[in-house]
Amino acid sequence: MWLCQFNERGFGLVEGNEIVDLTHLLEELPATGYPYPTHDTMIAALPDLLPRIADAKMGPRLPLASVRLQAPVRNPGKFVAAPVNYAKHHEETIADPATFAREHVRKIQETGLFLKATSSSSGPSDPIRTRFPDRRTDHEIELAAVIGRAGSNIAAADALSYIAGYCIGLDITVRGPEERSLRKSIDSYSVLGPWLVTADEIPDPSGLNFELSVNGEIRQKANTSDLIMSVPELIEFASRYYTLHPGDVLFTGTPEGVGPIQPGDKVHANIERIGSISISVDSSE
Ligand code: MN
Image (tube, rainbow, N blue to C red; front, side, top):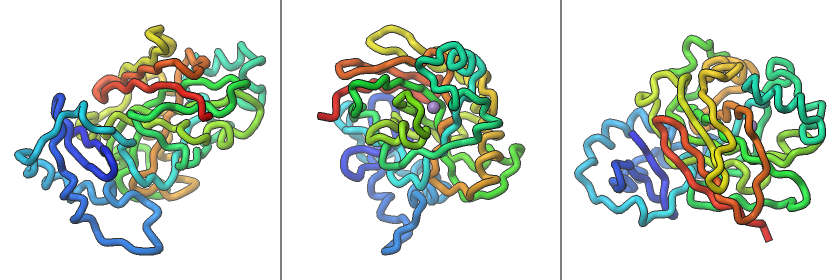
């Protein structure tokens, strides 16, 4: 299933060019009050919702083109992200010391993972708003995995059962010497979309072709089989340090071909079996 969030608080099932409106199902989520859960209650309830979604397919529909799609996870607890996780991207960072600060070109096994602020979340209908026009700001296309249930010390062999689904992630990045968490947490610099493809549709997340173009020119083109640390290995690694919760999003890393974007650009990204997004780049002023 392709599950989308749209407009103010719409929830729907994408079928072709239409959305089956499932917003009423959100009324059945467990009631919460202050202090609110620090996970996504819709993602947590997905195992219970999925049979209801199948039953609701005869409900009202609206054209996909008529809505403003939102990021497919509305309340992510954390964005976990993999640094340099494709060998050819590692090579390009080594070859260009003017762009990639030396302290950031180590192997993922040495660097570990980093976190992006969830306030940087942005949906497929929203522009990327560059904040530092005098600094190089890059696109990074990544397979994003959404955690479906809580887990700590998860074994790689079990890891895929903790995934609710997948979407496209753009890890927009200011290049420079500062910590990744600072340079990659700017408002609108974590794009997720166009919807959540439930994990049953992608039993194995390795082997997905994906590509990103800017103004029609292909910049990144790779396959998730080239990941240095696979999706299950990333989940095992991350969950050794912190509990993963429903709605946490794992940015799995970007391949070679990263490059600058600037206001006026149009970024198009596609991942096999997930879909496509087209994002405008604006300035934040
Ligand atoms: Mn990245």
